[in-house]
Figure 1 (cartoon, rainbow, N blue to C red):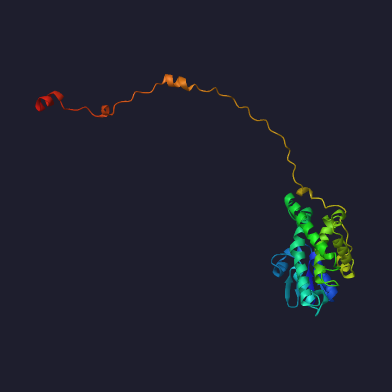
Figure 2: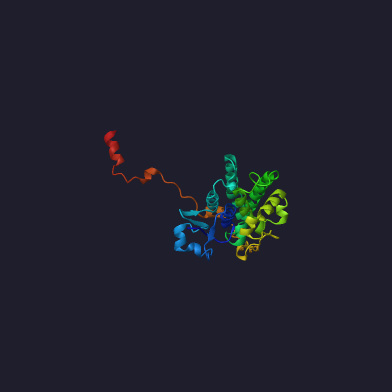
Length: 275
């Protein structure tokens, strides 16, 4: 059974396909795959209950998650240089794969996804994503100042994953004015996307001339700042409390003994008996 990938034509599918080109592994693409339709069928959900792509069918079972698929394809070739030539190189490759997945990808997604309609647009979230992305690009630029590739002297799996994750940024929102601040990242990206194995899978890479505008449904509503007239409050004249006191004087307090019932004892007779 040949390897069959169920995926749309995007960066997540490219990782495994580029790794396959470097590794000499044949991977077939499932025919007529349509994102949003094919990945919701019962057959696809059985392969991946999350309904996400890519999914790779192998003779030994199903493999999901784009980076895992790329690793699997790479490991099909013994002593594959994509995985480095030593334990430390292998560790550094995994380090940069994780960096691309956990640092770079979420920051670019936070900028790109609302602008392609995948997420609601929130101004503060986009600003935070761009701020994080600048820090990530600075770290990457610093490393690439003295390195042609991320690890070693040739293309590795780290470069495959990093370049694929950079692509939506360069293609959608990271204009020349943004990327020119990171010249080593620029050199690195254009070097990789023009490698034959990358170009065969990705096609010609182009940089965004302007930041992708927000869809009309995502544009923040402009609230008219009109002030409604305040309701008129009628003034009620203050009540003369002193006048009320004069009209209603305090009742005179009664002696508590007056509350007792009348006595049946005749005081004069009592005096005669006692005295």
